[in-house]
Length: 306
Length: 257
Image (cartoon, rainbow over all chains, first blue to last red; front, top):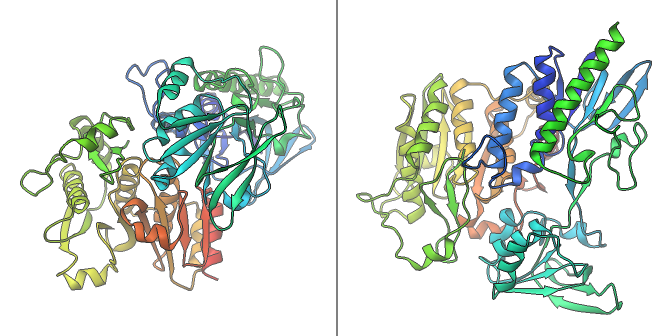
């Protein structure tokens, strides 16, 4: 029987691991689908207190992990598939193992949202990409679309101008969430065009992408545009699939926690980080919540034992 | 830890001295219009900034057994071959335990065959023996961490795979060739490369290549690579994205059936 199992290895899960390990709870950490979480994609984190020169997301995660390991946190590869209650404990299954634990800290974060059009799965990794820095070089002198209106989308569009012939930003609303300074840069860029408010209704092409069918959500008008690649940056969804029957989530899937705490609707189950935070979504906030979750779990175990 | 990788239209990849831990993606256009930096043997510019060298030195200070970087280049070096050789020599200079052996792809037939090298720039990481760990193209940007990772596991003679994974790999009966296609600006890629290298270390039947796809456009065409990491195992199994260790392992076993 484990005292604490932590699901996820972003800043929330790793901070929970540091605190739980120091509390001698011998935490078992399940690494999840993308070890390190969303942060590993950040080239540079400039707002993490204590790193005045900035640090890459990957390096930051490595430091978190090293610190958790130093105090004895154990890590295993895998994704939690099911959770069921057994007396006061929980039985977790991954594809390979079954674990029984007295407390569970859910820090599974959020995963990039897909376009959700019929042919997207066929083209994912073959012209549809969720990572502009990874795949941008494959689109030299091509026309590409960037879907989204947040900082990631605008940043991706600017990055892709290094390779692509034209970059068209497709966004479903008139309003852009991105920081004004980034929007300004994009507006001035000669390679960047705008399709606002439009959505991607379908992807055209046989073996590779030749274009996209865009739809205007206001008028219902559709229009075909030629492109060789589509970069998707339309936000993230909380990864709570395995936990929907266990804890109460809001309509978007975010786990609901008691105000000022990480306590979920299930006793002994705590949530921290982007999986329960629809508002802030910051590494430093996730880390703070991870700390709270470990302390909440510790207090819960102490109460159970007295 | 990584080395700055800059992409340009005119230059595949420039490795320039970097600020520790920062992968800058700026300055590309400017560089492309400038005179390319001189890359001949006499004037080869340093691939790593001093601050990075200090970090690498510290990182490599805990090595156990000696490690040889088997480097394949050629006479009249191509620009990236020169970059690659210089990088390996600079890394080797940071640890007493690490050395280089430089071979000519065109004339050193014996080692080319022994290590099964079919393209350059190429590096094999050899410890007590050759485990089949290969790098094709310069391991710059995020992939620099994969180079250090390979050196460390080979030196310690311990892949770090879970005991269950090690057990499963013992059941392999057929040769397995893993090719992981990457770009140096891909943060997900080192995870895939490092699992492949761990597997190569664990099984004599496995050879695992990191391939910087931009340096081998013919392979990008052959395998129609438009997204990375892209992993091809024995030509039969193929997947995009960095899978967790256990899933990656299943793909290896599937390809070896």
